[in-house]
Length: 164
Image: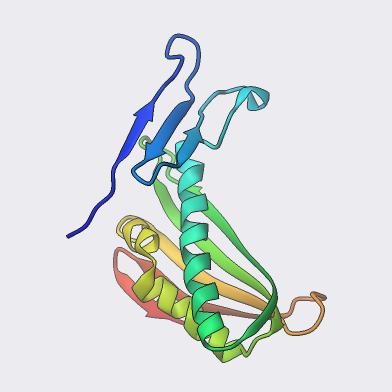
């Protein structure tokens, strides 16, 4: 079994809530829950979870599409989350939409998103223990005009995964 470690420090505990987390690979991530937006030095921890999910699944999908020799000219992942009303206000529902522009076959994109959602992305797997996570894509094979081709690929969550 392998693992990772992080050391988190609040440099100014008397005046600020910013946390500097240093990963075991030497990278620093700043999280901040300051109430004044202009004073923030980074995202809050809960919104950071969505960013980490977006990064994890994006790396999976792009890697799989490259192996399938699909040519992308643009790629984004939009992630939105709904939170419970009561503390600890966990995410209860998350929607992940992969937005792709390029010469990509819809079935190749669908399968890549499915594999990330159901097999490869550990962040999705952890979040799916407590939240329903819907995975979809939107594909523009020419210029990104109109609605493109859109499909819901999978929903993962505490009850397991369903496709389509």
